Image (tube, rainbow, N blue to C red; front, top):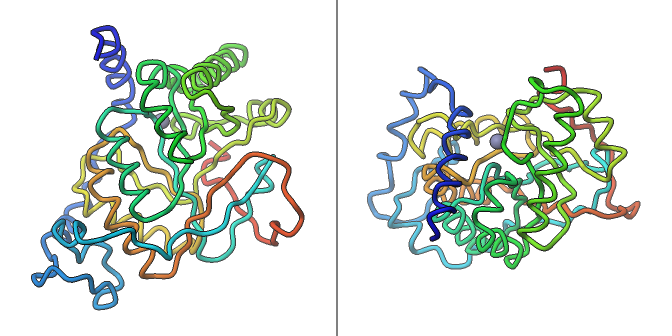
Length: 290
Ligand SMILES: [Zn+2]
């Protein structure tokens, strides 16, 4: 990798590390869950359907193109079009692309035959265009996440718009495709910016289930926490980050458990929706008021 790219990545990593905050003190009780793997190494999710982590890494290695998890494609042109049915989830990965981590996640998604949305930071996409294009080649949905990952609430409206536009341009230049989806860094939005996006062909990707994979927990804790949050919502957009090794490590267990509990992974695409894709349900952003 060119020295310049390495430096750019290092700068971005240091910026993004501020995402992390302090690990939750209550995470300890979940940490032993991975150790409780099936000694026989077989996949028996129904034995303990409440635990996404009753699997050993060796068992994951025996998974071959696990089907049954892929759901429908949902074409949307505004946030109000994102209407998921019961037991439907959207997988989203923010802050990348990141060497090694993003590729590991792509391999797992391919193994399970599902598509996700990658909300790329402009600076990261510029530093790693080869990985950005690999994400596109694998058929995943592309979105942007600003250029430098600032908290937009700390910027003026004009500065925030400039960050958003620069990030989108960088992601589109790196990937070669439109990046019509957008996620607010730190989920820090404003009514004015959301309104601006609605007028500029950008669909805000809200979050219903936060994996909190930015806390320095074990992969088991992340998978368990995500499943617990999802069971409470029964559907929704799941927030993860493709810059953390723990996220890449826990993803096979999470997808195995989603499949065992009958969830379907929906892929969002940008475009004019057909009427039969819309069903009555309401998704409210968790952090809209922040
Ligand atoms: Zn982020």
